Amino acid sequence: MIGVYAIDSMRVRIPLRECTYVSPKLNELIHKVKDETGEIIETETKNWERIEDAGIKTKFSIGTEKIENNYVQCLVMLVNAKMLKKEYLKGIFKDTLPVIYDYLISQNLATFSIDSFLNAYCTDIDVKRDFIEDERVMQDAIKLMVSNTIPHKEMNRGVKKLNNGVEFNTRQNATNSTPYFKIYGKANELKTKSLEFALNHLNDIPNDLQRAEYTIKDSKHLKSLIKSIPNNKLLTLMECTQCDFENAYQIILRNILGHRMRETQFIEKNDKMTPTDIVLINALIGLMDAGMTLDRAKVFLMGTMDRVNKSKWNDKLNSYFNAYIKPIENYSNYDKLEDALVKIGYNF
Image (tube, rainbow, N blue to C red; front, side, top):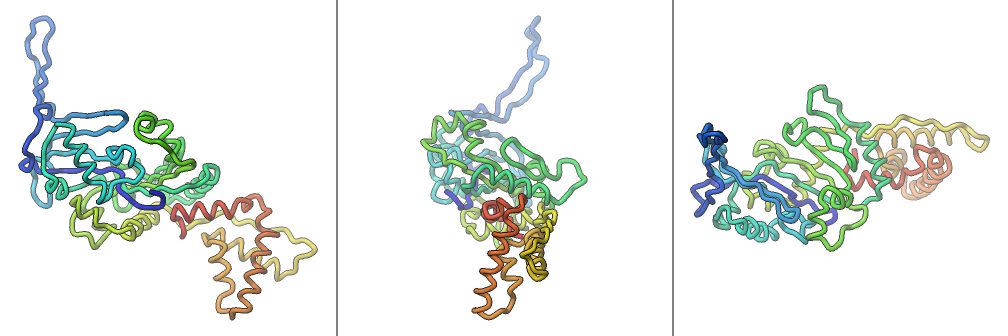
Protein backbone atom coordinates (compact mmCIF):
# COMPACT_ATOMS: atom_id res chain seq x y z
CA MET A 1 0.00 0.00 0.00
CA ILE A 2 1.28 3.43 -0.94
CA GLY A 3 2.77 5.41 1.94
CA VAL A 4 2.21 2.68 4.54
CA TYR A 5 4.96 0.87 6.43
CA ALA A 6 4.83 -2.94 6.38
CA ILE A 7 7.27 -5.80 6.79
CA ASP A 8 8.68 -7.11 3.52
CA SER A 9 10.75 -10.03 4.79
CA MET A 10 12.22 -11.58 7.92
CA ARG A 11 13.95 -14.61 9.36
CA VAL A 12 11.55 -16.55 11.60
CA ARG A 13 12.64 -19.09 14.26
CA ILE A 14 10.39 -21.69 15.89
CA PRO A 15 11.78 -24.07 18.57
CA LEU A 16 11.98 -27.53 17.06
CA ARG A 17 10.09 -29.01 20.01
CA GLU A 18 7.01 -27.07 18.87
CA CYS A 19 7.00 -28.70 15.44
CA THR A 20 4.77 -31.76 15.06
CA TYR A 21 6.48 -32.76 11.81
CA VAL A 22 9.84 -32.03 10.21
CA SER A 23 10.65 -33.39 6.76
CA PRO A 24 13.56 -35.81 6.40
CA LYS A 25 14.81 -33.40 3.71
CA LEU A 26 15.98 -31.16 6.56
CA ASN A 27 18.13 -33.93 7.99
CA GLU A 28 19.57 -35.76 4.98
CA LEU A 29 22.91 -37.54 4.89
CA ILE A 30 24.90 -36.61 1.79
CA HIS A 31 27.57 -39.13 0.80
CA LYS A 32 30.55 -38.40 -1.44
CA VAL A 33 31.41 -41.64 -3.23
CA LYS A 34 34.58 -42.69 -5.02
CA ASP A 35 33.67 -43.49 -8.64
CA GLU A 36 36.05 -46.37 -9.08
CA THR A 37 35.13 -48.39 -6.00
CA GLY A 38 31.86 -46.96 -4.74
CA GLU A 39 33.57 -46.32 -1.42
CA ILE A 40 32.04 -43.56 0.74
CA ILE A 41 34.84 -41.06 1.29
CA GLU A 42 32.89 -38.32 3.10
CA THR A 43 29.47 -37.91 4.73
CA GLU A 44 27.79 -34.68 5.69
CA THR A 45 24.35 -33.66 6.90
CA LYS A 46 22.22 -31.37 4.79
CA ASN A 47 19.98 -29.46 7.20
CA TRP A 48 18.31 -27.06 4.77
CA GLU A 49 16.03 -26.94 1.75
CA ARG A 50 15.77 -24.00 -0.61
CA ILE A 51 12.52 -23.53 -2.55
CA GLU A 52 11.77 -21.44 -5.63
CA ASP A 53 8.23 -21.46 -7.00
CA ALA A 54 7.08 -19.07 -9.74
CA GLY A 55 9.39 -16.33 -8.48
CA ILE A 56 8.73 -16.92 -4.76
CA LYS A 57 11.91 -17.91 -2.94
CA THR A 58 12.26 -19.24 0.59
CA LYS A 59 14.47 -21.48 2.68
CA PHE A 60 13.81 -23.88 5.56
CA SER A 61 16.67 -25.01 7.78
CA ILE A 62 17.43 -26.56 11.16
CA GLY A 63 19.98 -24.95 13.44
CA THR A 64 20.91 -23.92 16.95
CA GLU A 65 19.69 -20.41 17.66
CA LYS A 66 19.92 -18.11 20.66
CA ILE A 67 16.46 -17.29 21.97
CA GLU A 68 16.52 -14.90 24.90
CA ASN A 69 19.32 -16.40 27.02
CA ASN A 70 19.19 -20.01 25.83
CA TYR A 71 20.50 -21.87 22.79
CA VAL A 72 17.70 -23.90 21.23
CA GLN A 73 17.32 -26.21 18.24
CA CYS A 74 15.05 -24.30 15.87
CA LEU A 75 13.26 -24.47 12.59
CA VAL A 76 14.40 -21.37 10.71
CA MET A 77 12.38 -20.00 7.78
CA LEU A 78 12.96 -17.08 5.46
CA VAL A 79 9.59 -15.37 5.13
CA ASN A 80 8.85 -12.71 2.52
CA ALA A 81 5.86 -10.75 1.23
CA LYS A 82 5.96 -12.50 -2.15
CA MET A 83 4.21 -15.39 -0.39
CA LEU A 84 1.14 -13.12 -0.50
CA LYS A 85 1.22 -13.41 -4.31
CA LYS A 86 -1.27 -10.89 -5.78
CA GLU A 87 -1.32 -9.00 -2.45
CA TYR A 88 2.47 -8.68 -2.44
CA LEU A 89 2.60 -4.88 -2.50
CA LYS A 90 0.51 -4.71 0.69
CA GLY A 91 3.35 -6.28 2.65
CA ILE A 92 3.22 -8.40 5.80
CA PHE A 93 1.03 -7.13 8.60
CA LYS A 94 -1.41 -8.71 11.05
CA ASP A 95 -4.22 -9.28 8.55
CA THR A 96 -1.98 -11.03 5.98
CA LEU A 97 -0.25 -13.42 8.44
CA PRO A 98 -2.76 -16.29 7.88
CA VAL A 99 -1.86 -16.30 4.17
CA ILE A 100 1.86 -16.47 5.03
CA TYR A 101 1.24 -19.30 7.51
CA ASP A 102 -0.78 -21.33 4.97
CA TYR A 103 1.93 -20.89 2.36
CA LEU A 104 4.67 -22.14 4.71
CA ILE A 105 2.64 -25.18 5.77
CA SER A 106 1.85 -25.97 2.12
CA GLN A 107 5.57 -26.56 1.44
CA ASN A 108 5.30 -29.85 3.42
CA LEU A 109 8.67 -29.36 5.07
CA ALA A 110 7.40 -28.75 8.61
CA THR A 111 4.17 -28.58 10.56
CA PHE A 112 3.56 -26.23 13.47
CA SER A 113 0.57 -24.47 14.99
CA ILE A 114 -0.51 -20.94 14.18
CA ASP A 115 0.23 -20.03 17.81
CA SER A 116 3.81 -21.27 17.47
CA PHE A 117 4.12 -19.20 14.30
CA LEU A 118 2.77 -16.04 15.95
CA ASN A 119 5.16 -16.49 18.89
CA ALA A 120 8.18 -17.17 16.68
CA TYR A 121 11.21 -14.92 17.16
CA CYS A 122 12.23 -12.74 14.21
CA THR A 123 15.53 -11.29 13.02
CA ASP A 124 16.75 -9.62 9.80
CA ILE A 125 13.45 -7.77 9.54
CA ASP A 126 13.08 -5.65 6.40
CA VAL A 127 10.54 -2.83 6.76
CA LYS A 128 9.36 -1.14 3.56
CA ARG A 129 7.35 1.88 2.49
CA ASP A 130 6.28 2.46 -1.12
CA PHE A 131 5.52 5.78 -2.77
CA ILE A 132 5.00 7.20 -6.26
CA GLU A 133 7.57 9.56 -7.75
CA ASP A 134 8.87 10.36 -11.23
CA GLU A 135 12.08 8.48 -12.05
CA ARG A 136 13.95 11.59 -13.20
CA VAL A 137 13.10 13.49 -10.04
CA MET A 138 14.13 10.46 -7.97
CA GLN A 139 17.55 10.49 -9.60
CA ASP A 140 18.02 14.10 -8.46
CA ALA A 141 16.84 13.19 -4.94
CA ILE A 142 19.21 10.22 -4.76
CA LYS A 143 22.08 12.37 -6.02
CA LEU A 144 21.43 14.82 -3.19
CA MET A 145 21.25 11.98 -0.63
CA VAL A 146 24.53 10.52 -1.85
CA SER A 147 26.24 13.92 -1.61
CA ASN A 148 25.10 14.22 2.03
CA THR A 149 26.05 10.71 3.13
CA ILE A 150 27.96 10.48 6.40
CA PRO A 151 31.37 9.10 5.37
CA HIS A 152 32.80 5.85 6.81
CA LYS A 153 36.36 4.59 6.52
CA GLU A 154 35.53 0.99 7.43
CA MET A 155 34.96 -1.65 4.77
CA ASN A 156 31.33 -2.55 3.93
CA ARG A 157 30.16 0.84 5.16
CA GLY A 158 28.88 3.93 3.41
CA VAL A 159 26.96 4.32 0.17
CA LYS A 160 26.75 2.08 -2.90
CA LYS A 161 24.96 3.09 -6.09
CA LEU A 162 22.62 0.55 -7.69
CA ASN A 163 21.25 0.36 -11.23
CA ASN A 164 17.92 1.80 -10.11
CA GLY A 165 18.68 3.30 -6.71
CA VAL A 166 21.15 3.39 -3.85
CA GLU A 167 21.92 1.42 -0.68
CA PHE A 168 23.71 2.44 2.50
CA ASN A 169 25.93 -0.02 4.40
CA THR A 170 25.30 -3.77 4.05
CA ARG A 171 22.49 -5.95 5.31
CA GLN A 172 24.92 -8.61 6.62
CA ASN A 173 27.01 -6.15 8.66
CA ALA A 174 24.27 -3.75 9.77
CA THR A 175 24.68 -2.21 13.23
CA ASN A 176 22.94 0.51 15.24
CA SER A 177 25.43 3.13 14.04
CA THR A 178 25.66 1.85 10.46
CA PRO A 179 22.19 0.52 9.61
CA TYR A 180 21.21 -0.94 6.27
CA PHE A 181 18.96 1.30 4.16
CA LYS A 182 17.96 1.02 0.53
CA ILE A 183 15.89 3.21 -1.77
CA TYR A 184 15.16 2.15 -5.32
CA GLY A 185 12.71 2.01 -8.21
CA LYS A 186 10.37 -0.84 -7.29
CA ALA A 187 8.52 -0.78 -10.61
CA ASN A 188 11.80 -1.27 -12.49
CA GLU A 189 12.91 -4.01 -10.09
CA LEU A 190 9.67 -5.96 -10.61
CA LYS A 191 9.99 -5.67 -14.39
CA THR A 192 13.59 -6.90 -14.41
CA LYS A 193 14.96 -8.77 -11.39
CA SER A 194 11.54 -10.07 -10.25
CA LEU A 195 9.91 -10.45 -13.66
CA GLU A 196 8.96 -14.11 -13.18
CA PHE A 197 7.10 -13.28 -9.99
CA ALA A 198 5.40 -10.23 -11.53
CA LEU A 199 4.20 -12.18 -14.58
CA ASN A 200 2.81 -14.99 -12.42
CA HIS A 201 1.16 -13.01 -9.65
CA LEU A 202 0.67 -9.30 -10.35
CA ASN A 203 -2.02 -7.89 -12.62
CA ASP A 204 -0.68 -4.35 -12.52
CA ILE A 205 2.51 -2.56 -11.47
CA PRO A 206 2.03 1.14 -10.63
CA ASN A 207 4.13 3.43 -12.80
CA ASP A 208 6.99 5.22 -11.03
CA LEU A 209 6.61 3.01 -7.94
CA GLN A 210 9.53 3.64 -5.54
CA ARG A 211 10.50 1.81 -2.35
CA ALA A 212 12.39 2.81 0.79
CA GLU A 213 13.50 -0.13 2.91
CA TYR A 214 15.46 -0.58 6.13
CA THR A 215 16.65 -3.61 8.11
CA ILE A 216 16.19 -4.31 11.81
CA LYS A 217 19.00 -6.76 12.45
CA ASP A 218 18.12 -8.38 15.80
CA SER A 219 16.32 -7.90 19.12
CA LYS A 220 18.94 -5.45 20.41
CA HIS A 221 18.68 -3.33 17.27
CA LEU A 222 14.88 -3.48 17.46
CA LYS A 223 14.89 -2.28 21.06
CA SER A 224 17.16 0.66 20.17
CA LEU A 225 14.73 1.78 17.45
CA ILE A 226 11.39 1.06 19.16
CA LYS A 227 11.97 1.29 22.90
CA SER A 228 8.42 0.33 23.90
CA ILE A 229 8.57 -3.06 22.21
CA PRO A 230 8.97 -5.95 24.75
CA ASN A 231 10.46 -8.58 22.42
CA ASN A 232 11.01 -9.58 18.80
CA LYS A 233 8.20 -12.11 18.51
CA LEU A 234 6.21 -12.04 15.29
CA LEU A 235 2.91 -11.07 16.90
CA THR A 236 4.65 -8.29 18.86
CA LEU A 237 6.03 -6.88 15.60
CA MET A 238 2.53 -6.90 14.16
CA GLU A 239 1.43 -4.59 17.00
CA CYS A 240 3.95 -1.89 16.01
CA THR A 241 2.24 1.28 14.86
CA GLN A 242 2.96 3.38 11.79
CA CYS A 243 4.43 5.94 14.20
CA ASP A 244 6.80 3.28 15.60
CA PHE A 245 8.07 2.38 12.13
CA GLU A 246 8.34 6.05 11.09
CA ASN A 247 10.37 6.94 14.20
CA ALA A 248 12.70 4.00 13.52
CA TYR A 249 12.98 5.15 9.89
CA GLN A 250 13.98 8.65 10.95
CA ILE A 251 16.59 7.32 13.41
CA ILE A 252 18.12 5.24 10.62
CA LEU A 253 18.11 8.15 8.13
CA ARG A 254 19.93 10.36 10.64
CA ASN A 255 22.57 7.67 11.12
CA ILE A 256 23.41 7.60 7.42
CA LEU A 257 22.67 11.13 6.18
CA GLY A 258 23.84 14.55 7.30
CA HIS A 259 21.76 17.71 7.03
CA ARG A 260 20.74 18.50 3.49
CA MET A 261 23.46 20.73 2.08
CA ARG A 262 24.08 21.96 -1.44
CA GLU A 263 26.79 24.17 -2.81
CA THR A 264 25.56 27.70 -2.15
CA GLN A 265 24.65 29.74 -5.22
CA PHE A 266 24.73 33.53 -5.32
CA ILE A 267 22.69 35.60 -7.72
CA GLU A 268 24.07 38.38 -9.85
CA LYS A 269 22.68 41.86 -9.26
CA ASN A 270 20.51 43.46 -11.93
CA ASP A 271 19.21 47.03 -12.21
CA LYS A 272 15.81 46.20 -10.74
CA MET A 273 17.21 44.73 -7.52
CA THR A 274 17.77 46.75 -4.39
CA PRO A 275 20.37 45.79 -1.77
CA THR A 276 17.46 44.58 0.40
CA ASP A 277 16.31 42.33 -2.45
CA ILE A 278 19.80 40.83 -2.78
CA VAL A 279 20.07 40.18 0.96
CA LEU A 280 16.67 38.46 1.13
CA ILE A 281 17.19 36.38 -2.01
CA ASN A 282 20.61 35.19 -0.84
CA ALA A 283 19.09 34.44 2.59
CA LEU A 284 16.44 32.25 0.97
CA ILE A 285 19.09 30.43 -1.07
CA GLY A 286 21.31 29.92 1.97
CA LEU A 287 18.49 28.51 4.10
CA MET A 288 17.36 26.13 1.36
CA ASP A 289 20.90 24.98 0.70
CA ALA A 290 21.27 24.31 4.43
CA GLY A 291 18.35 21.90 4.28
CA MET A 292 15.21 23.95 4.84
CA THR A 293 12.20 23.67 2.59
CA LEU A 294 11.05 26.88 0.94
CA ASP A 295 8.07 27.06 3.33
CA ARG A 296 10.26 26.54 6.41
CA ALA A 297 12.72 29.18 5.17
CA LYS A 298 9.88 31.68 4.77
CA VAL A 299 8.59 30.96 8.28
CA PHE A 300 12.12 31.42 9.64
CA LEU A 301 12.60 34.77 7.88
CA MET A 302 9.19 36.16 8.79
CA GLY A 303 9.52 35.18 12.44
CA THR A 304 6.98 36.92 14.69
CA MET A 305 5.44 39.24 12.10
CA ASP A 306 1.73 39.93 12.51
CA ARG A 307 -0.77 38.22 10.23
CA VAL A 308 -1.11 41.09 7.75
CA ASN A 309 2.64 41.50 7.27
CA LYS A 310 3.16 37.74 7.05
CA SER A 311 0.67 37.54 4.18
CA LYS A 312 2.42 40.44 2.42
CA TRP A 313 5.93 39.05 2.90
CA ASN A 314 4.89 35.52 2.01
CA ASP A 315 3.83 36.82 -1.42
CA LYS A 316 7.02 38.86 -1.70
CA LEU A 317 9.30 35.91 -0.85
CA ASN A 318 7.40 33.71 -3.31
CA SER A 319 7.96 36.32 -6.00
CA TYR A 320 11.70 36.41 -5.16
CA PHE A 321 11.86 32.63 -5.51
CA ASN A 322 9.96 32.50 -8.81
CA ALA A 323 11.69 35.51 -10.40
CA TYR A 324 15.31 35.12 -9.26
CA ILE A 325 15.97 31.67 -7.76
CA LYS A 326 13.93 29.20 -9.80
CA PRO A 327 15.51 30.32 -13.12
CA ILE A 328 18.94 29.25 -11.76
CA GLU A 329 19.69 25.77 -13.16
CA ASN A 330 20.30 24.22 -9.72
CA TYR A 331 16.85 25.35 -8.54
CA SER A 332 14.78 24.92 -11.71
CA ASN A 333 13.42 21.60 -10.45
CA TYR A 334 13.29 22.64 -6.79
CA ASP A 335 9.55 22.18 -6.21
CA LYS A 336 9.51 18.64 -7.63
CA LEU A 337 12.72 17.69 -5.86
CA GLU A 338 11.44 19.06 -2.55
CA ASP A 339 8.23 17.04 -2.93
CA ALA A 340 10.26 13.87 -3.57
CA LEU A 341 12.46 14.47 -0.51
CA VAL A 342 9.34 14.91 1.63
CA LYS A 343 8.00 11.56 0.35
CA ILE A 344 11.35 9.95 1.13
CA GLY A 345 11.29 11.48 4.61
CA TYR A 346 14.54 13.41 4.24
CA ASN A 347 13.28 16.56 5.96
CA PHE A 348 16.27 17.54 8.07
